[in-house]
Length: 239
Image (cartoon, rainbow, N blue to C red; front, side, top):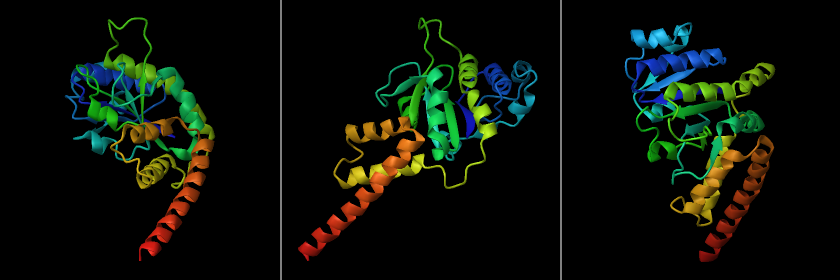
């Protein structure tokens, strides 16, 4: 399981440099930047002390869609309750959740908004799950680099787990396929994606373990087959 950290429109070079340093100390190396400031400026390099390789290897994208196109499971970070999502897990629960997903996901993205506004509702809507860092008080809030450090620390156990596992095959990432199949069945039975219940069901899939994912996939296969047969019988009656 690969974990990459994505910073959307970061405004402060020092934060990017400090984020690179945080990732390297916890065993991560993949940093993605969406429309960043000058992330290779001297201030960024100073804060990245000893982690310039992570900073220099950062991938730069001109849109969030491009930066997340190959992500199987996207986690958005937000300390506030947002109408776009109901699930918002503490950072400390993420590693265990991701471990339970096993081979159903191959690439995890942890998405951070910029220093001023964080992630907006449209950005959060594309995430599979939201997460927050529990704090004793809301102010003063953590800055971007501090938040990256905490998530890197909490997810570091995944590095140790991955080192013991054989690489997954390209067909193993079943989570996105599950989402597509559930959406198809829901639309077929009239629970279209414009309904809140549709979006809520899709969101809850993010909490399923690997065993549950395969179980639901088996049920869906039978259900889709049944729906197809019933539709074919109805069409023949009309004729």
